Length: 442
Image 1: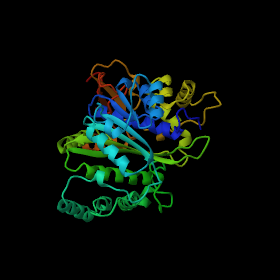
Image 2: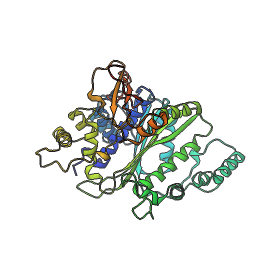
Image 3: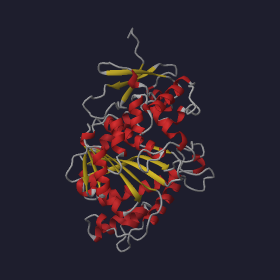
């Protein structure tokens, strides 16, 4: 394990932070939304460092911390950013942003949900809101008044009855007229719903990094419990924004342990929320992403031993788009280490005692139809056609079957030229269309 550059930034956290911002940028590029600014909790500047590495303009970042010492320290590290001492929920009313990361240092609770709600409401829509919380240590019997939507008792009873009929006991518990909100009870209800919705036996065929259950199927995995907490957050956001045009969907869930060479650490989960305004926009975005064959949800666990390779895996993936020095900035590691990982992975050999076994590329996230080295092709005019190997990618084969193309038909992915003014650094849109491969003869 490498040492942390920032307090609390374990390798798992570094990789997860990079994953969140990379996914946020890809998501916003895919739906053709420019970067308008970012809102983050200041802490020790980990998000800002990652954004710098991703080549995203940090002069449009507002970093907020309720602790004066932390805000002052962050301002000294990053004088180019707008650093504010205050409450993020309140500050969100006065700054412009359409992407945020609320990296809480505590567990799921009413105050955190309230902050997420305010940040979502005040963001320029569509937006992407990242949330990180402790996975565990939840308290019981919290006052929920600040989250309650402006509905009459009669309406609340009808809404609660509807959710009971849908077996959504998280919502039913929250809408109870007299009982306080109990995060532990809500999480337990979400876990039960998850067990009913997914088959533990079928889950045994899924890699551990994506499995929602433990090997014996009796318990939820670390990722499963993270999914349950993400469901609670999402449900409470939907209920607390009742009466507004704001809609959210969960598009990312990850789990990691803040393990370093100094200690075992604690479990965390990170989720990404896509925020829309109005059902028309929500449905339109869903259709766009489905047509582009883009996944609506990314999920992965860095638990169960994956922490030891997570920085290497992320570095190899990012190296397709960024220089070694930029990747080093994103992940807070040495440039030489990134170069070693990349060389070792691409050539298979590298004489460096710090390099472990070659990275298993099956664990590296890929974009579009698993075509990820798109940044190495420079200077195309309007579109970039990329050949796709047949037989390796289920989504490609399904698409070809639906179009009635033969199994030996050569195909390619056509990616639109990225908008250089979008502000998302080097991220390339993952929207693309599959077509029969074009030859020079036509």
